[in-house]
Image (cartoon, rainbow, N blue to C red):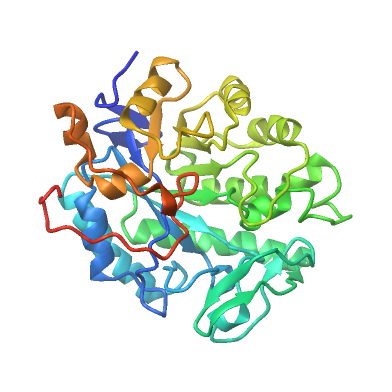
Length: 360
């Protein structure tokens, strides 16, 4: 079996090792959604990863769900993200942008227009949004019309083209963690009776349409998708996880890679691995006590043939030079599991940005 430090090619993206930095929200963009120098420092420090996947980046203003998260729907976003990608490439790294639409996980106070959040159905999420005025309950979202669904697909396409212009090596579509695409997949958030709801075939339709449209726009070999089967985050209850992903995975087009984020769902991971014919990246959490994942956990995934590469979140936060530390056998800085959730960082506890090459 390959080691974490051996190269692999995912679509057209050549990785110098099989360590993928998982997407983690950092809340470091400026209020207009543009990338900052702090973000460029952060990603450049971790460019020794085989692949860096950015924080969730909204494809449209209505897709924003958190304060100070970046976008890719305006010329200024493209220009400032180019600074980030140039820095990562200058250090020999590869970087993919994760495009995310938060759906009902948002609040009108986050948007200059004050518009209503959107979702497959008008079902409010339990919980609160961090807003400029402090925590506020999630409101009842607007149910997307068929025309608005089509427009949202086009938003993803436009953002994907913007990503290529900004110098990204590819795009990842976020279809997990309780955000818009996951909301369409789940029974408790999708009560529609049209072609985008009801049966499993209807509930997977939006995710499949977004993925196919993006792949057609920028190439299958630069497109990826992230799934989080069985993840209850953001008040999600899929209801029929095994059947849902048994239908969704074969319906996806050819991709550079499919990423699966586990939430103690190893049987589902094995089923997806058997169904998926392409490259698979796994964010591994096979048991309740496996958060955060370790270098040993990651190597075990490769040894078992469960994936072609492994994505890690908290370990990359604590160890920006993680590949070098693995090669040396450690030592490893301890990861802070209190702010880590299934490969995504949704808290507001910030980690210090280290000096270039400091390895602290």
